[in-house]
Length: 262
Image 1 (cartoon, rainbow, N blue to C red):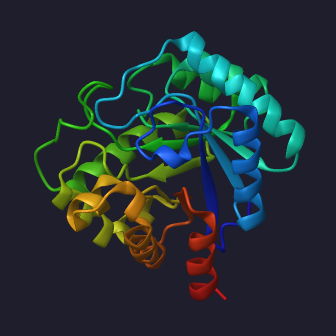
Image 2 (image 1 turned 90 degrees about the vertical axis):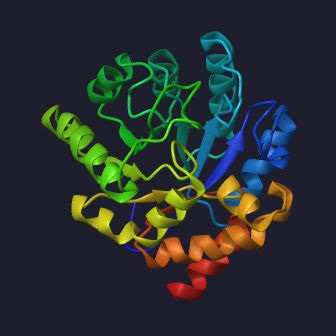
């Protein structure tokens, strides 16, 4: 993928409880219509999530998550054979099944902390990997906040994790600062406004802030009313060096990229 121009990752949630209700695709028809909309509007990556990671979400069984992912992958690979597909999971068994069924990228919110066996799956398959900053456990990741400057916390985390991955031979790593995870509202904005410091790692940067609480809580609106705020912050992220934007609304995102990188 040519990252000299920012790319768009369209979100597909095959879940019943993702925080933004309009992103949930329960039926096969809904999934294919949502995927087609993303692709037509300019997404170059589709990101499938089989389990919500919103605050207070309930962990589904591995079998349920695997079934959702495999069924979605099978449909999407048939209908969109050339599109890159990312799978949002921190479970090693789900990741391996996703790779077996054609996933190109594993998008892991946990930095292989929630299931250490994921590290071996990623390295063994030499799969492209999105490494996100997080602190705590699945149950506490939205409440637990580390002490100290958030920018340095994130940089130290990436430095340690990249050392492990690269010493094992994995080079295709994308860094996700983890907006909304293990951070206060103020932390999120401090990190966004200093994101250019992450360029020191010479890795692509993915930003996923679409309709998140750092927008709707600050503006006192709902996720459904947060597109304008999302567009504003995505603009800042691009100017600070983001290479991939993970979004619910591909058309609005592409318009920002077209204006900034025409």
